[in-house]
Length: 254
Image 1 (cartoon, rainbow, N blue to C red):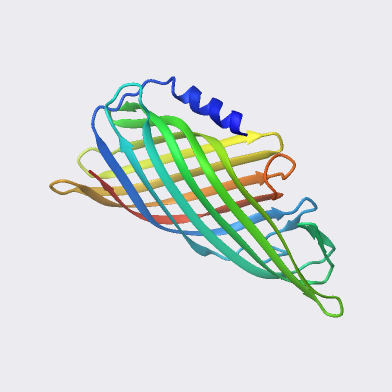
Image 2: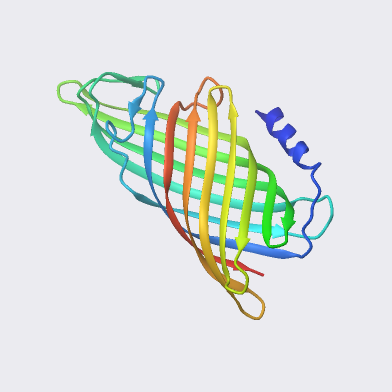
């Protein structure tokens, strides 16, 4: 994994930088999302069996620094935090975290997701249309906990987690409508390795207005985080799940 991330970073460093002004871009706000997919190597359904489909509120933020220095990449730092829980009933024996949860048990499940990104990227085009390409080092921290109880068989708890640095390819684009302050944007980050894959993409619409020294605005969008994790590849969690939903941001540029 470490050699893989290093190779991706070195590849991105060969791209030419084309930023022509110094700027700082930042934003952050609420992310309302729901979860779907499966959990475990002998999988159960996150929605039907564990009851995790309800929408919950998470939070995300970013700050990016762009400069005119040739060959040096721009830098973007971002973070996201999202937690959800639910209750359900297991219709068959389910082995998770080395524990076998018996059929008929009622469950209380929590899924906690956090990540922090450090992205190095180059602005390949910035006239009328912005196009950025680069690589991301993502510190991904996912933990799952299943508490269960069955009348006559007692109660117990099972858990698995994933806490690793993951390299991702990064691409982003933005189109501004002249003289309106309106813009449309999209970005994607992702990579696949053996039986595991990571994909994070979003689309957004925004509006900004200029003040003396800063541009302020608001942005709304939709984001999908899709992960297929196999503990045989990396980490200690086997799961195939999506976290997706709408978000709203305040944004600024100076």
